[in-house]
Image (cartoon, rainbow, N blue to C red; front, side):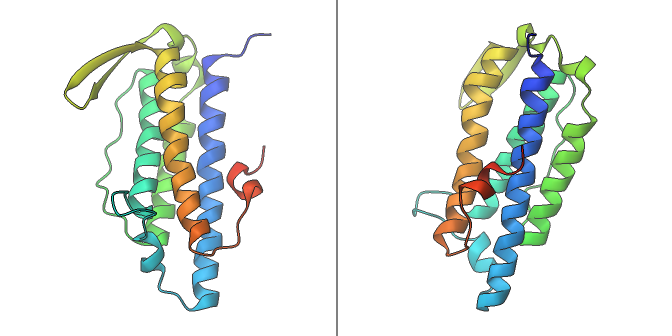
Length: 168
């Protein structure tokens, strides 16, 4: 049996959103236990030229809602990117997951051949749905999810690989 575009996209997106949401719960608990201001964590970056945790999660959720919408051929919801606290970031993840869940198999299946138009820097790029998903979305989504995880882990929150992978 061949996998459909929906089966390869929506469950993958939802699994990672759920995993990072759970990692944020552990981060909040760790901050409380260690008497650390959570703003230190949400503003933390791994290198001076990298974006902080809050931005990593904002971009990860932008990638998630963008992929679901593009594959479904619908408008991408717009978020203000104002989240600074762990509860605000968790709310953004929840809002994104709700949107992704609203996309149906009927909307996404067949999207592997749909033209996806992107603006990358100063270039307009057109990709087939499968190229967009596997060669653009997946690496970008996981880059920001892994960077968010790495920031949290680097700040001393006791998390591991199982937390990143989450439940299957």
